Structure formats: structure tokens, C-alpha cells
Length: 513
Image (tube, rainbow, N blue to C red; front, side, top):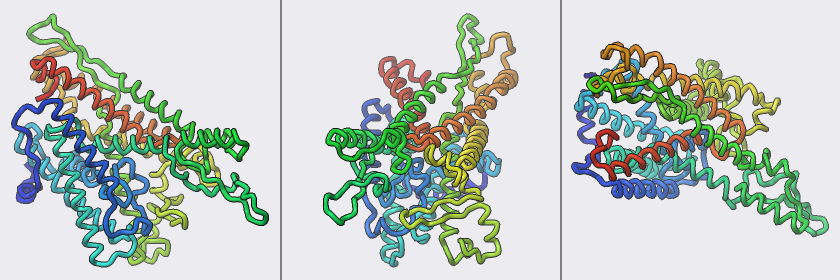
């Protein structure tokens, strides 16, 4: 066992913990706990932080809000970022053999889980302090700083415990997946039905006469949601008032990401992901003792589910977060002035501008982070002035390669590698017809399929996410992919729970304890 885990044992003991249920938790009780935790998350995402002005400072998480399940200026400012970052670090440490853990040993597995929780708490503190001192809320006095930090730490601990409550068996699925799905679905509903004003509402192409001589015409304030926007145009056209042309209704390039074309793209991605989920390679199996009983071991194309996408976005979020802070801190000399000796090399990684009408920093060309944020819609992708096509190709390639790499890494550290699957099948009394019943033989056969399928699935997921971003879907491409995958997982969980209620003898077979 790793010395690192032993070192963290005193901290693990003092961490707040949710006890696993010592009885069988009914499906209804799990559903109620899941619904209550989801409701608490939604409330926290709307409760503003006390003592700040949300109009001040910079939104360092702007590009990753959807995936981090966070909301600017609320108790969910950090979202699930600390949890996912802690999981990413631990997986990389295990995958690189810097720490060794036997996941088959309950004691070592509990130490690993506890260490990940300790690291999540440290990441919460680190991100909160970095966010505050980097000027995310403007200039705060010492009292405000302490107050905001306490709020962020408290909210971060609550999120960690909510996720642990669900994963310990009190709820359904995992808290991280539940919060991501809720955040993505909230944005899609907002872009569909919001009656608030659209972004960049002062558009020069649509001026409404004031009717008063000598006064300039006023810009029309279009609604943000695509459904209210269309209804607003229909109403304007019926009374002869100025209304948007068909191109604007379909694409809205200057106005908002919420467009009729984006609605179609969103539904297409939903359907394609569900379709891809059905692709699998079936390995024939039979019981060693009962030769007539045959079965199959399915290796799905999306073998590692949405884990590679979550880890990729966690890596993106932390890289963008850290580089924005370094760029925006003049005392470090790495910003636009570049007084530090390493400024030249840092500028190859990150360069930003701060537009006057936005509270977030925009990555600039000729640097790595520029390729970590996608073109938002076709107009941005095909804009030659901003090298949108180059940015899109770079974004897609990096995203696909990272997803494939994390997929390959995940199968080795999560107990779903060919070696682990072979041991499980042999332990269940299974073998492949026509082959000797041996873990080594079964592992060699599975080795032909599992790594290849996992990498292909990672590449495909990355390509689909880039496609959704380029064509202006109602949420980010990765957000939609995660939402679809999580919904499907919950559908399978609900089906298993209901089946186990009807046939209790099948609980072991379904993996429900």
C-alpha cells in the first residue's frame, strides 16, 4: 500500500463522513433522497454569495460553467470542480504507479476513497482562495474576504457530502453526474424558453422608430429563448412592426447561441449518442459446468461511458483557471506587459484580452489555451478574420486525443481492464466456447477488443462534442453528451431497481446490494 495513503490517514479520520446504510434501502427511499439532494443543489445554485458585487471582477470559470455544474456569484460558484479535480489527480497518480492501491482490498479501497475526499477539501480551499485573491469579485476588504471564503468552503463541503450520500447507497447514481445533468438541462430549457433579453440586444440591424421628430431610432430588445423569440417575431409581423429575417431566426449569429438551427442540432446529437450507445462487440460465453447454457459479454463502443469527457474538461478548466489568474496578476509579470523572464514561454501557452463589455477573459490566437475553447456557432467557425476554422480543427483534435487518452488510462485504473474482466468472468464460472478455461487465455482475447473499443469511443465522443459546439447547440457539445449519457445511466438504474423490487432473487445478478 502507498505511503501517501498512510500519511493521509489522520486527516481521513477527521473528515465528515456519510455512513453507508446498514439495511436495505428501498427504491422509493433512494428516489426521495436523490430528489431532495437535487433540490438542494438547485437552491444553492440560485442563492447569491453574501458580501460581493457580481458585476465586479472576472469570471474565471466562464468557459467551463456547464461542465462544472457551477453558477456565477452563487453558493455553487466552484460547483463540482474540486471533486472532479481530486478524482483526476488520484487517477493520474494510480495510473502512473506513483501510488499503489489494491482495489480488491476493502481497507485499501476505503483509504483511497478517503484520500480523494481529503484532496477534494484541499482543492475547495485552494480554488476558493485563488478565486478570491485573483480578483474574481473585485477588491474585497479583509472582512469580506473571510466571509466569502467561509461561504465557498461550506458550500464545497456540502457538495462533497451530497455526492457521498448518493454514492454510499442512499440515492441513485452519483451526485457529480446528477448535478452535471441538472445544469445542462437547465441551460437547454433556458435557451429554449427564456423571456429575458438576448445577449448583445442593442443591434444596429434592427431599429424601431420612436415616432418623435429629432430622436434617434431605438434598438429592439429581442428575447433570449428561441421559442419566445419566434413568437415575438410572429406578433411583430402581424402588426407590421419590424421583425427579424428568416436567416436571423435560424442562426441568430449576432444575437445569441439560442437559435432554431441550434435546437435541431441539439436533438440530432441526442439521437446520435443514443444510437451509438447501442453499438457493441459481444464476446460469446458459456458456463464451464453447464455447457448448454450460453451467454454474451457486451463491450459497448462507449465502454468507459462519460468519464474521459469529464476528466478532459476538468483538465481544461484547471488550465484555463490557472493561466487566467497568472495573466491577470500584474505583480507576477506574466501578463501583457511580460516583465518576468518566463513571460515569453508563458505567452506561448496563454494570452487573454479583457473586453470592455464582458466580465470574462477571452483567449487569444497563437497560444495553447485558444484551442481549448471552441468556436461558438457556424459564424464564428467560418470567420476568416478570426481564424475560426483553424481554431475549430485544433480544438477538435486536442479534444479527441485527450478523450482517447483518458479512456485508455481509465480502463487500467478502474477495474474494467481485460485482466480484471477476465478474473471476474472466470470467478463467475464462465469461459469462451472452444478455448481453455484460463484467466490468461481470456485476458488475451479481451485484450484484442477492450483497449481498441475504449480508444475509438473516446475519439468518437470528442468528435461529437466538437460537432455540437461548432453548429451552435443549445448547450456546450460536451455538456449535451454528458447529459445524454447520464440520462441513459439513470434509465438503466431505474430499470434495475424496479426489476429487483419485482424479483428480489435477481439483486445479486443486477449488482444491487
